[in-house]
Length: 443
Image 1 (cartoon, rainbow, N blue to C red):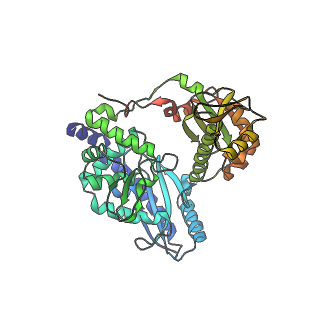
Image 2: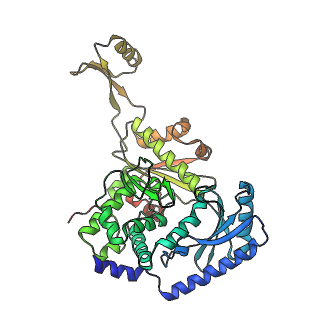
Image 3: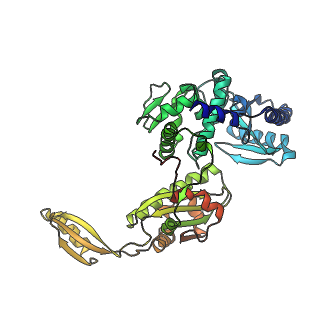
């Protein structure tokens, strides 16, 4: 394993020419923002943050995060207004645009490198006014805690997570963030130790120190905030993928593991995928993804109540105007009739209630061998497309969160299979109908 890790380290460590170029870009952007903040007494500092500041960045994907530190007395409105003005004015020749997290921030690209100008408050440790306030503390902690060797170990771990498709803290991904990667290396010391430890992880195992109890599959404590569980933002699916990927690599550590692999899939599975497509008004990616995921969960419940067995579900958005909800069903067509189990015949009042409610619409009623009254009912819809279409037309509030109902009222499309999907969308949701040979392997 050590030989493999050594080879990967050489591949993921940015060469000196790339480091020099990135520094030039970072210094230019920093200087532009620094010139602009002189006009604002509300601002008390400016500093780099993120992986660039901690020297844990990957050469092909390094963003430059510049944090504007505001006096903590500044109102939320001014905080947003001034930071946007600074971002747009300082980066005006690079076509800046707004991105959204808890607060809007300004982003631009200089020589294909993303520059993020992010506001935060200048607060004491633990006195957070916004989620971005922790970042300067994260940065200082990691700058002091990570040795040069450990920084490269972080790079190897990030690459491992990327190739397993579980890297990224955004709500769309619900994976492992760059900061979590650094925390894991801090706790275990090296990439090899992370692999060996995670492969043997047990339910509710805790990484770090805390006196608080958390109800997540694993617990990863933020080193600067013992009450914060970093694993709360990671989905169980991604935690499971990480554990299985670590077990696989531990059994057979090869360079092949670090090379992109296509998932094994069957075109036949698309025949059982129900697709709901709709357009939405532009809003923060975190907001739209939260709404889309909520809608997917609610509609899964409605499909199950309608008699359709949902095996898996997934959502997709271009974060501009289009969204898709996907449901892999056991079958898109189910029997027209279904049996409804009632009370045991000894329970007189319950029997009377069940019979009175069902006798008119039942196809057949009988007493089973387990002493219960059974009613055979006829479904209104036994085809998934018709079921979903009627639900969204007539009972929108049942399966769609309030924030999306206006978008759905303007129109939607329900279909089965991949016929109307572009190649990029099919690739984005390919794991819905595929088996990942990286993690589901035994040898």
